[in-house]
Picture 1 (tube, rainbow, N blue to C red):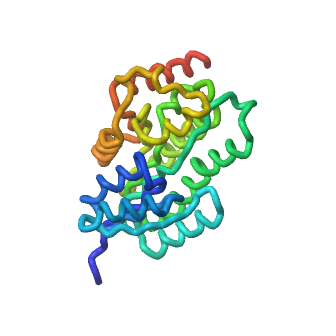
Picture 2: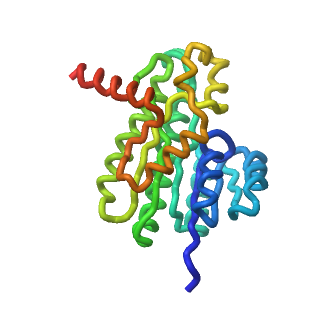
Picture 3: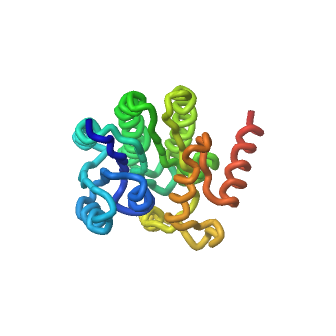
Length: 250
């Protein structure tokens, strides 16, 4: 019987945190499956990582039934995976009543439906192998309900609760679950909502982090038993403050 290869599947892998997860998982893995809508960006990443890891490009839109089905089939054919990183996501910015409902529903579908579907597909294989790692990329916004980010923050709060509950259900299986809750990161993510009125200059520079640091903190936390991982001391203080505000409302 051939030795099992270490395999990771990363969604939203074409840029930002997703691409960085691929880079930092490369030394830990034999195979990485990068999933994203932008196939040309995935091809560039595959070329960058050539020689360090076997990289498979999966161009798929996880907001479509077809895209989720193709990703699940890839999990079945090329898995089982040792690392599942549910990173694909986006945000809108603006008051809920002024935003298109279809876009908000798409956000729910991508952040929640796609994540739980891929987790459900991966967990039985991980259990059979005796272990694995699931990283659901959440947000500091899960702790701090913010004006203009109503649905985005709500979907991330779901990911926190889901990850904590799933971690508890899987205790003793060797499978660990993490909800990574970064704050502001210098990626394309925030550039995309600037056109809707988000002003990066209003956020103090000390609250911004680089994707390399965020991913390093996430991967370093694996094995610690910690489910909610908030990178950065300032972000941890804000998260604690947000939780306290919620308790004060009870």
